[in-house]
Length: 218
Ligand code: SAM
Image (cartoon, rainbow, N blue to C red; front, side, top):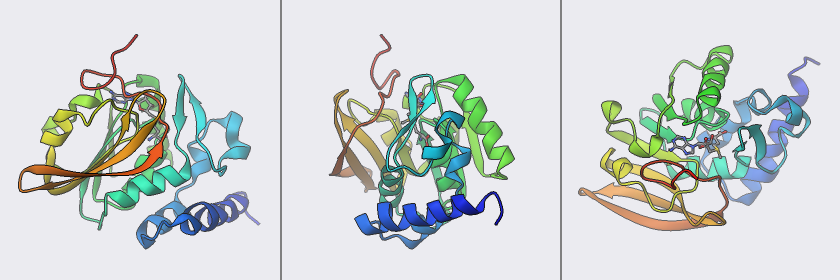
């Protein structure tokens, strides 16, 4: 048995019991999450809990999201493989690593520079070459690379940030946790004829999206 083997088994179990059993149907999403080594993206202190059914601390008061929430948000983007995707809130880099297997290019923004640097290093180490990382206020998007076919915000916003709507391509999808600081609901939007059609999905709890079009820093 190789060192990676126990993690492969934990990943299989995660996909079966935490994702498929709870209604994640997109085979490409399930396959990607069966392949991305989540243990590489968690803090070493939490290595033994890498495949727990929960979010985990990654330092700087931030978290790597629960696998199920990663799957729900990824599935909502309905990626086919040729898209350009923007993620706001790189955090550990795990969500971006999943997206990297499902889209052509991923742009990800993290406001905390050391987290952005760590994620950049992990993408290099794990051979992920189609993810571009930058450290800035993601609520303003990445206008130079717009429009995006998919936009995913992995932090809690008071409302869908307007610059992100403006950077969404026609037919593109956006997913954002929207609510107050204690509780949010996933808002899933699709750009149709220049207007954003939205629906509300599951409840969730994320760390705050802090920036010009998010919550103000205290
Ligand atoms: N997607 C991450 C992962 O796979 O580990 C989890 C993200 S964590 C729940 C939310 C992240 O959003 C934090 O790392 C936080 O620093 C970042 N964040 C908050 N406001 C931001 C902003 N305006 N721009 C970019 N990143 C932001």
